[in-house]
Length: 379
Ligand SMILES: *Cc1c(COP(=O)(O)O)cnc(C)c1O
Image 1: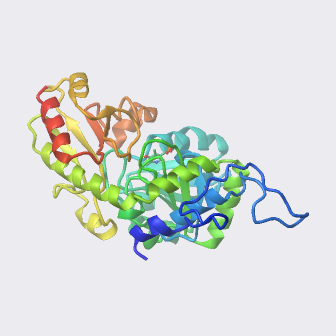
Image 2: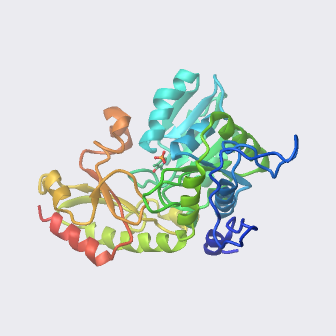
Image 3: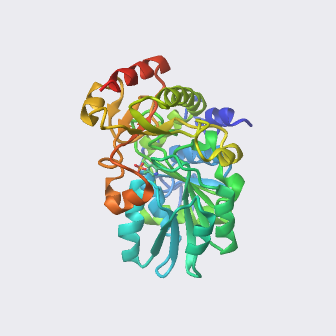
């Protein structure tokens, strides 16, 4: 089945009572037993819920996994995967990952006895050098946030496998529509469904998708034990959003390409980061592992020519806001906003500057978005 068909059809026909075409919301916290030991497959919503199950079935199908857990937030999903580790283990992660993930890995995991090394994941030799006999997990984000660096999925996952490590890929930026890490051997894929999968900026959620039944069993057990599963209402909203994933991703991408081309070479823009520009250094990997370029781009604003605050104030349509992946365009300043929790050292190491601007391109008309930039960049 084509992914566009899966997004619309998988997991949605659950109602046998009234033949509803969409999945009902079952907000019930608990489910009664007909007698001890006999129920209809659900007992308590933290552990299992029909609405959430429908979403999990859908997401597993989109990624090509053996199962999925829908979680309360993206960070909830990421936290749960780190519980595959135990005290004394070591984790290798990219040095330009999502700010919240960086904070968890840098400031929380060491206190739980898990050491973390941050490396430049574009450098396979650096990844190999960072792996120790204690390494049990390799954490990959590609394209990276906010600089859209491309990591060699097959190459890094091969290093993980050779060292008996789990490999986890945060696939939030591409969504399964443009990138499917299981094709390259990943063990788990995580998402902030807050972003493209839900797509409407009206829910926070996350997901872990598992490559095998065995990993799924452990992961689902952990999500229940930790209590980070998603509420039925929120799961229903994500399922509603996911049905239009394909058309939204195509629209985000077409607009992002047009805006990137406009910004590229603009006299007040120093540099544009977008996988769809021929100048992007990751061409070969982009062709190999991505089927599209997505809707995220970043650029370096020349603040000697345009005042930063005036630029944001003058930019029509783009809300100055964190987050991404919704149908409306958003813009933000990673240094002071989304990535500030990395601290100055982490920011500098990852290549983010105080002129870096990150844009989540929405599905408005490209001409309107370009006109807005044209005006605001005049300074
Ligand atoms: C937003 C985001 C997260 C965290 O998700 P929340 O839903 O905000 O908890 C993780 N990874 C990436 C790449 C993200 O963009």
